[in-house]
Length: 199
Image (cartoon, rainbow, N blue to C red; front, side, top):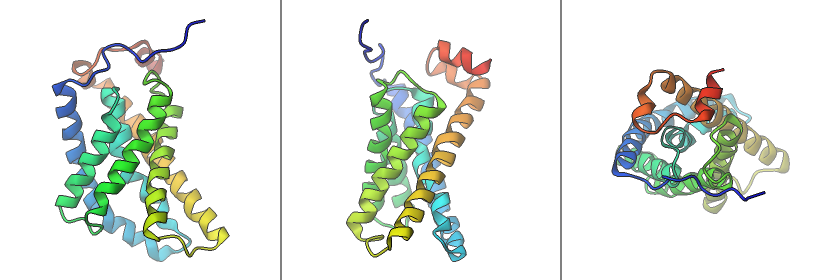
């Protein structure tokens, strides 16, 4: 049995980079708008706002599902966070650090499957990876260091759940809906997995 190797033609082309940047700009605007929405949920208590956190991971997973090449998740997250910061994100320069770690977290899981798997499970795992990246910086900045054990569990659990729902499920099915329009055919050839997804 031969070992899997990364798929051929995986090098990023200029078109791939430009499309990724366009996707990132759209999500960068969404990220900026999402801040107030996140704050509006906070008064509900019990870390309910963490359910909405997954939106900030969606640029990476969605862009990868469209382009399906190494480096896209990181590029999309960093670019989206840069746009958000330029638009006046309330988190300032740290937005860029979050974008980098979130992108790397998502990229890690796509890489673990050698960029050959683009299904719902892998997308959801990538969303969890992005969430893990954000939590590392949360701990570093001391945002959650004073929480009790049950608060940690609730906080992290809800963020992971929100990540899977938004950056996993929603990103995956949104990309599938876009594929049905035929737009993605100009960016990459249709794979056997694409045909199977339509069954």
